[in-house]
Length: 99
Image (cartoon, helix red, strand yellow):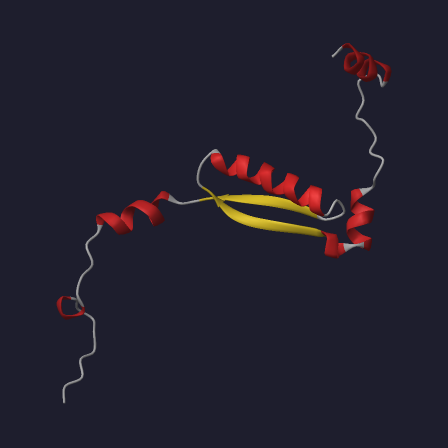
């Protein structure tokens, strides 16, 4: 802990410079960088993300996976379950064909 404090104070509290320029690496090797977009359903998603990233890093250290999370609308989850399905014969605005 003290070594980290000394390191930060020696940098005069400025950002640490990266040894790898990710923007350049991303431009030169786009096949190594991928983004996965998933629905965020609970805090468990973060644990799964960490597990997958560590697993991929062990197998292929040059391969980078980023996770993008999107929130799920409650309307899409709750409302369809509250509303009963109307049969086709009970709904209006339909075109019927009789033989």
